[in-house]
Structure formats: structure tokens, C-alpha cells
Image (cartoon, rainbow, N blue to C red; front, top):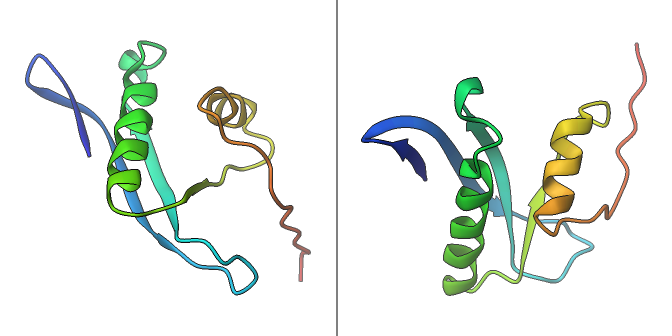
Length: 95
């Protein structure tokens, strides 16, 4: 899904099917959402997410998944404003 301003691409959103063995719903992942810095905070990302949700619903998906680096507060807060809520926690260790 491409976002345009005056005919110029300024952002995009990519979706893909998501599957967890322990989740029994048809899930789609918001894999990438990007908006050029000079076009951020103008509602473009929110509009892309709303369009993605509508498209996913029309195609039989029941939930949408998005992930963000935990220290990226701006991203986490953006997704929360779009109606996303934490569902799990990922952990890692240095080897």
C-alpha cells in the first residue's frame, strides 16, 4: 500500500500472513510501515493502517499483528493509538 502526496510516493505499508501454532485465528502482520520524515505526523501512517485494517477484514483476517523495537517509544505509541495492544514479549540474549 503506497501513500502519496500530490502524486509523489511518501510512504508505504507491507502486509503478510502471520501464523502462530498457539493462535487459532486468521492473522495478518503489518510487516513494514514507513513514511518519509518530512511527511510524518500528518496522518499518513494512520491512514495507511486504517486502509490495511479494512483490506484485511474484507479478506477474512480476524486480527492484525505489528511489532516494534521496545525502545522505539514513538513507534510503540503510534501502534497503540491505532488500536494495537501488547500480546506477548520477545526475549533475546547475546552469544
